Structures are given as C-alpha cells and as structure tokens.
Amino acid sequence: MNMKKIVLGTLCAGCAAIFLTADIKADSEEFVRDEYGLLSTDEVQELNSYGAELYENRQCGVYLRVTNDLAGYTYADDYVENVYVVEELGYGDDHSGILLLVSMEEHDYAITVYGSAYDVFTDPVVDDIEEDLVRYLSSGNWYRAFRTYYEECDRILENYTYHEIEYDTDDFIVIDGPGSEPEPEHRGVDPLPVGIGSLVTSLMICLGLRSKNKTTGVKHSAGSYLEDVRLTKKLDIFTHNTVSRVKVADSSDHNRPSGGVTTSYHSSGFHTHSGKF
Amino acid sequence: MAEQVTNYQCPNCGGPLHFDSATQQLKCDYCDSLFTPQEVEDYYSEANQQALSVESNNWESETGQWTEEEAANLAAYNCPSCGARLICDSHTGASSCPYCGNPTIVPMQFDGALKPRYVLPFQLEKEEAVRRLQQFYKGKPFVPKAFTETNHIEEIKGVYVPFWLYDATVEARMTYHATRATTHREGDYSVTTTSHFQVARNGILTFEKVPADASSKMPDEYMDAVEPFDYSRLVPFQMSYLAGYMADRYDIDKDEDEKRTNERMYNSTISAMNRTVSGYSTAVPQRQDIRFISGNASYAFLPVWVLSTRWNGKPYLFVMNGQSGKMIGDLPVDNGKFLLYFLVIAALLFAAIFGILSM
Image (tube, rainbow over all chains, first blue to last red; front, side, top):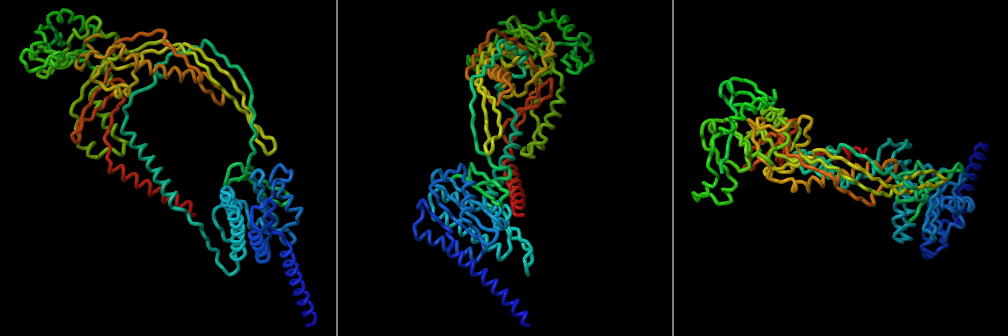
C-alpha cells in the first residue's frame, strides 16, 4: 500500500513537474517578435498570448518572427531553420513546433515545421496556411495575415488533438480515434467553378460537333500543289548566348500558393516552405 | 450571229450518246454501243458543220420582254434532235434538251481561245452521288431528323466546272532569328543557356496546277472545299466528254483568279520555307521576300456533281467531287437538339467532376 502511494506520488510529482516546467517555459517563450515594426505593441502582445495558449493547450510551439532582412543568409529556408535552432524553439523534448519568418527586405517568407508537429502540419496543410498568408501579406494586411496564421494553426491543432484528424492534400482523413467510428469529413466542393467548367466544356464539345455541319470554306494555302522546293541558300550564323537562372521548386512541391516558392526537406527534421509575397 | 448546237447520236441507231464514267467512253442510251471520245469526235467532224443554224440572240430584246442586259446574257438554240427551241445562259457550253433529253453541246463556246486545254472525265455516277449524300448526313448529330427523312433532292447535275490551273515558280528569300536552348541544374537553380542564330534561307519553289474555279455561278467556298483532284487522269479536251453533263465556259478570266491563287501560293511558300529551318527551339521570321518569277494558267474542266435540295423554304447545295467522291455542303442545325446535347453533356460532366472531387 505504501509502495503504491509512493509510486502514485512520484508519478503525480513527475506530471506536475512536467506541467509546471511547460507552464514556466510557456511564460518565458517569445512566440512573436517583430523587429521590423509591422505590428503594434498590443498586437504583438495579443499574438504572443495566443502562442502561449497554444503552447499550453496544444503542446506545440507556434512562432512568428518578422525581421528586417535575412541576416546574411541567401535563402529564407536556411535562415528560418537557423532561428529555430539558435532560439531553441519548440515544445517538449522533440522541440515540436512551427515557425513563420517574414523578412521585409525582399519580401521573403518561410515556414518551417519541426519534430512531431510535422504529424499535424504536413506539407499540404502548410500549403493551405501559405495560401491565406500570402494573400494577406501581399496586400499589406499584416495583422490579419499573422492572426490568420495563428487561428489556422489553432484550428488544425484542435482538430488533430480532439478528433485525431490528419490532413491530407485537400481533404480531412480521419484516423482511428478512441470511442468513435472513423467518419469521413469533406471540405465542401464549390459547385460554381465545377458548373462553369462543365458548361464551358459542354459548349466546346457541342460547337465542335456543330462544326461538322459546315464543310465548305475558302482555302488559303496551296501546299498540296507544291511540287518542288529547291534551297539556293542555307545559312545559320551563331550570334551570341544568353543565360538565365531560375530557382526551381523541389520535385515533391505542388499546390503552391504563389510563384517562385520552394520546399526543402532536411535530414535534421525540418520541413520548410518558403516564397515571396 | 449564228450559233451552232451539236448533240452526239449513235452512229449505229441514232440514239443519244452520253459519256459513261464507268467505261470512260460514250455510250448509246438505246443500243448500249460504246465509242471512244476520239471516234465520236472524228465521226462528228462533219456533223458539226451540218448543225442547225439559228438566229442571233437579239430577238428577245426586240419583243420588248427582255432588257438589253438580260438579252445579252441569253442564247437561243434549236435542238438538232427534236427541233425544240432551247434558251439558256450565254456561257452555257453543254446541257440537255428539256424536251427530248438528248445531250446538247454548243461547240462555239469552246472554240479558239475559249478551248479548254484539259478535261478530267467523271469517274463516279449520279447514283453514287445520291448514296454519298445519305452517308454525308451520318455522324452529324445536329442535323434535323426531318431534314434527312423528308427532304428530297430536287436536282442532281453532273457539271464540268471551268477552272484555271496555275503553274508558278516562286523565289523566296527569308531570314529568321532562331534560338536553341539547353537547361541544366546548378544546385537549387535551373540554368538555361540560349544560343541565338541569324538564319537565312533562299529557295525556288514550284507549284503545279493550283486550281481556281472560273465560273461565277459556282461559289468559291464550295469549289475550294471539294479539292483535291487527281490530275494524273487529266486528258486533252474533247467536246464529246461533255455529252450528258452540264458545262459553262469560264466567265472569270485568269487575271482575276490569279490574285486569289497567288495568295494561296504565297502562304504555302512561307510555310514551306519555315519548315526548312529545323533544329531550333524557336525560329521567328524577320524578313520575307516572295517573288513570282514565272507562271501560266491552263484552262480545264473538272467534274463535280451538284445536288440541290430545299428545306423549310431554304435552298441547300451539296457538291461532290466527280472523281474522288468527296462530298461537301452546309447542313442545317437543329437548335433544339443543340440545346439538349449542351445541357445533357454539361449535366454529365458536372456530375462526374463533382463526384470525383467529393470523393
């Protein structure tokens, strides 16, 4: 009996220690830092509180960094990963978390996901986050962009935590959860573009069929009557070379929200998306 | 002005002769005797001289029933078989007597400078034209059912259409700006190296027998669409080939048709020269100098079957190549069917796409 108490007590103490440690860390974490000054102090504070709340309730670090430039890095991908490592961001032993970095000098952004957060923030999910984010960033709606980022992360983490929903491409796929039957849940398919696409395609097919009723027409070429082509001069002179360099997307990259975006996967455990806004 | 009309009658029984496309000879309607065009031409060299003379066509204007202009476009002949008075277009060269049905030919329409150089004899019969018209309706879902079921061919005519066949030699001088691109990967970058070239091509192109119909009665869009003809079967013109068919002499001169033909040859010259520039990613023409350095036109008769019909008060014309059987013509569209197809296809597509996306 005594032994049982000791074990229970130890477990409770351990749990409390972990909980308290997490709480203390949550309080001390800087979830949002705006070096460039895009946000007001209140906005920073509000988003920071949101980050702390997620840290506590969802066991995941959701971070935002707004910087003046890439601090000497060529690519935002490298910089965001460096920030994550240097600042020792993330929740728990595996440093699970997601970091959005926005560099204002050349309008770069990068999102990196680390640790078990990648179970939730898979590539298609981050693609979806980017879609809204880039739209607001491009229009200079900074607070809305960052607020949406936090809200999206919150919603995704909530779904994952309570419904054990794993995101895939455009749909939710429910994986086995305790006490509930797997039940597919779909994002609504917008019937309007499907309808318009169907009407346009149908019209093209029908016009194609209709054109079979008209077979007359004036000819503008006489190729069938060309008997001979004799070349009397054939000259090909090289004049100069031009070279162009374009940063390419990873082969696994798709569903990008805007042009010029790349994704890189590192063995270190980072899954990073980046682009311009 | 005296005008002559000839019809070819069987040297054996006196029955009317017409050109038989199956045997490529003239055949007697009564005794089925066959004669080559040359035999008939020889036989009738004297007969042509005995053809009936008729008064000039200015008699119509004297009655006051025809205007000067109308009268100028009409000609009157007497049928050498039955003596009936035939009034037809002043360009008509071959027709048939509406009373006795005998083929009649107006030799003066093909005299001197008006003599065609070639004729391409009919290869297909009238029955084949009717059969191909029925086939032509198939596979066209918007043709009104009533049109295919109830409409009747009003008239089928085998017509030798006057054509100018243009031979031309064209000189082309073209320059292009061409590029050739290669791409390789350098780290995260795709590097494209584009090599630029100045390309020049000069050439001599030869066109042979580019056709242009020389009859204002035949719409250009029909005569162009009914091409091509197999010129290997062209033969020197003999009037007896026209027996049993309609034929008008040309009323569009070669200079007038030449503009349209030159445009066709010009376009084809550019296409042909463009094809000589190969091995490049892009080749954009910069300068094109096209000159026609020689050319001549031959006058020829090419065979077509003309089928006319009327539906809902509107005339419909179909033309079949008398040699290859290619049928062309514009068919009416059933707007109700069009709408029905449009809605059904749209609904099916919507259901299929929506179903796939919702899965």
